[in-house]
Image 1 (cartoon, rainbow, N blue to C red):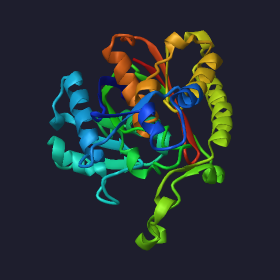
Image 2: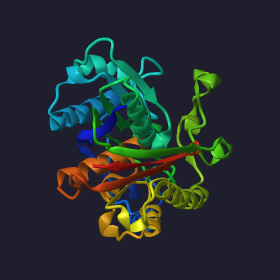
Image 3: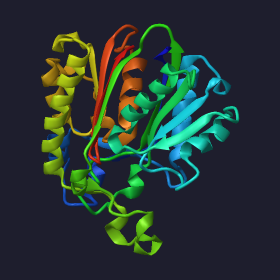
Length: 323
């Protein structure tokens, strides 16, 4: 049985930056209020002609370049997203054509909201370990601005657009040491987009196709759940809190992220944080944060990383990785 390791990372952020000061002109809010409660100072928003596959392609090309392989070597493409180009075909299938990946490769999208990238790592790792694939592109990509109600101050200040990608390759030494995934659909009303194909296109009116969130309740559940997830991950690997070198969390809220770092016994300078500059990019946030810390040299080969996320569903999951 093979193991899988990360051989390359990539990221892409749209050019347009929306600051808190700009949001002050749209809704009743303030830069101070947003920063104090979320840690977010700005976010990137896709251009009107940009779609999910555009962002995903740019991140994937950088990941391939950093891995030193061509697209024709990839035999699995997995895109984690809540904002795909179409109902079908999948955004992953579109990338096969756009990237020049050989016909016959495996390609599909995965929907687990903000936990999507961690879910995607788990699935790709299982393909590689069981011989179903040798090299995989795992991408988190979102154009979340398309499903935001820009008059709802409780949600429009939080989210941004972007894409992050990793190349996973089979190898003898373990890279992904363990993954831990969970879900609970009983709390769907706390965070959702209350529209789907089942309702029919005619029902897509006003805020029905936009994000709805009860933020305080989501915050409480997330902090409690991620704390338990940290314990689960460490115990499964026989590790102590101080053994982890870097926490790479989903970039949802600086208070949630800091609480998780405390649970690990890590100082905040061992936590990768991009939330101030990028906001919550949903499934793209972890691979973007990982790429940032790899690119600037903070994360080095051999470091032990804990990736963790919590998202709508609810879904939550972690990945322990020897980078």
